[in-house]
Length: 560
Image: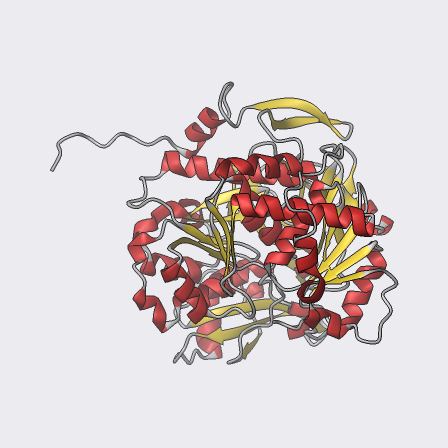
């Protein structure tokens, strides 16, 4: 054994300072963004087409692998994108600023279309592939695209509906686009950083989804910030024992984690991404992990739990894994414990980011050490991001006081498309965005308390469901929990918890209340507890649909 002492690794703060210093890849400068002075990355690409063109350097390295056996190298992908872009321009007249809707399950055609459209300067309308017919019509009416690209299953939901625009069916028409112009070059249309690139529909967990319009600048900044998180981890954590392999890409492409993360950031980093198709199937994903040398898993909480609980996971070499990422929904204490048991060598490589479509996906990032200290810690704001906490009158609050979380950065959306009322509520002077979340800052870190719309008011006391959920999640018999308010004539609202037990567990209402009461004030302890055997209803990004639990709506998503 060597007597050489292990070099001391920098703290998160020290690593951040080094990575942002002059001359570093992540050097920051101040520029004007849409009329406001703010920090930006100096060494950034100026458009998504620039990122795409740079991917030629990866040549024959694999970029896309789909579970149906189709695969693309970076060179093959670039050639096909150029051909599809030429076809869309020449056959359908698609150009700069035109909106084009994509309505499909995860498939190669989705990704090729995305890159072709943004390279033309067009705007991708990422339609939710789980929507039913009425929701699809709503999305089309809101976005008013010039063209619809869709697969057969989604088009079948629109049978008998005149969408009023040309339609390209992926299964029937797309191959001709891919073969339209062999040897074509990428379009050379001028694209500005703040030109719109992508319309992302919000989750719609309480009502009609809104369309958050994000720019080329947003997605490029998201990519740079993702790389920054990885570079900082490499400085602050011990090196992985094995070189990284491929990355699992399970998120829907209509979600920002799918388009901006698994598609865009992966391309910019020269990563091989493996895409399961159809319903989320742990058996299939474990097979792909083994055959494609996947060493990095990412997914919503529900995805990761289903993988870790599957008996076939025993066939995998846990030591090969370099990262487990969770997005789309909160990282719970139970999930962290489960990951640590399966992958003890990962240590601080378990982390979670906080963000939303409106904020460009990345506001802050918490590593495992921060999550161990406080389950509701979402970490310090990331580079270029400013966070402030305000009261109902818009006055900035001091550290430690809970209020509305507001964010400003080059990543924030341009606007909600065709929704002036929502813009007036969310877009504040100075390009600040009111996230609709409640939290506080302490020692430079952000702590998330609850969604504002989820807050329970019981007898005049404000109660944050996330605080109660975080406590009950610690109970060894609990797999999932959702907390919300139910109407009460005397108190206004009472606290209700819906519990899904772990397999074989039978927690009693009294046991759950007693456990909650050990750490929570009496008025926060759930008065109503429902134990159910079915998983909690979640949308496509893994967020619990509390309005469905409360009987105020129904789950109309069609998971395929």
